[in-house]
Length: 162
Ligand code: MG
Image (tube, rainbow, N blue to C red):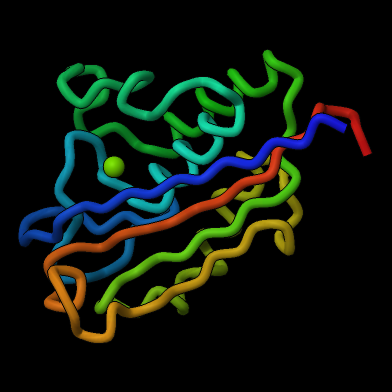
């Protein structure tokens, strides 16, 4: 069996005057993540994990951050494009697991909505997508509330395999 794993990581700064979108879900908060697209840190980490496992480079190569087509882009639309590339290579996602590192806001209450948004795109049952939240224990830029980071791992197998 040709099993592939991928690891993704992303971080965006938090600033006033931006929407906060994580895992395809808009979260009410007084700050949002800064980036060329909607800066969805979880979806970006997932995309990099998927691309890494598929041998397809990284998110910056596929969706350059100086390309006006991706300004304020909905990152779940970028994820759909990545999933099309995986399908073209006959690869299917079997499992994904993510850790969001944020001092605030609380991520836990939004995990169900994130799963509802992301599992259909990934072709996964809800118990095959892990989304967990940690704080940074008050340390560093994340701990000061200046940024949110995310780690993601994915497992791919040939589509149609066991
Ligand atoms: Mg990013």
